[in-house]
Amino acid sequence: MQNVVVYIGPSLDLKSAKEILPDAEYLPPVKRGDVSAAAAGAKILVIIDGVFFQNEAVAHREILQAMKSGVKVFGSSSMGALRASELDTLGMIGVGKIYEQYKSGEIIADDEVGLVYDKETGVSLSDPMVNIRASFSKAVTCGVIDSEEEASLIKTCKSIYYPDRTYKKVVKDSNLPDEKKSALLSWLKTNSVDQKKLDAVLCLETVKDFI
Image 1: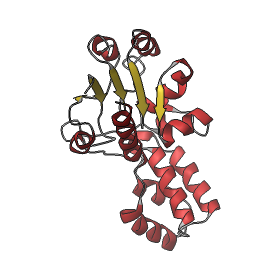
Image 2: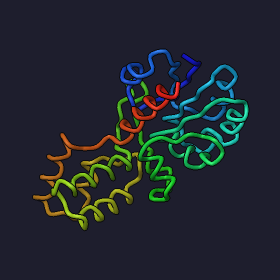
Image 3: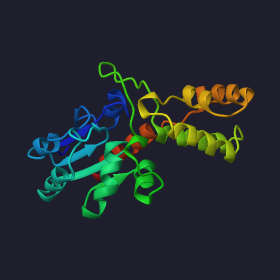
């Protein structure tokens, strides 16, 4: 296998990732300077998760320099989807629904993919808005809520600071009737959509096919 470096965190657990690309090198969420350091020895870089604070986020310039040196760079799910939507016309390869949402302008803010997680276990402590959007859209399709209720829930979600976003808080803070809140929360326990995970899996499978 070509030298593949994957930056991954809460979007996809390491065990699942290794089942797709067992020989890749897996590193923590990308931060500024990481791509420049890895580009010298890698032929393929896969950016899934990354640090979002402005002074630490991976820079466009270092991704462009890596691609200029011949490295193929794929992006998906989180920071990867965001950077791919900004650099795909220059050669970065975007994969997945979240990338497509950023590319189309359906979503534009960094906080859509932002979350907090336990750095020791990798377990998410909040729910990213892209997942919440996908889950509420599915709830409409399944007849659990209607489109007006979906719009109201999204508005409520957007008003909550991203580290505090959870399905429970969004539904609790919404103006849905109590009976509908209980029904929705019950449905979400087994039907919520992890779009970031779905996109991460698709991205790694895409890289596997590319290789």
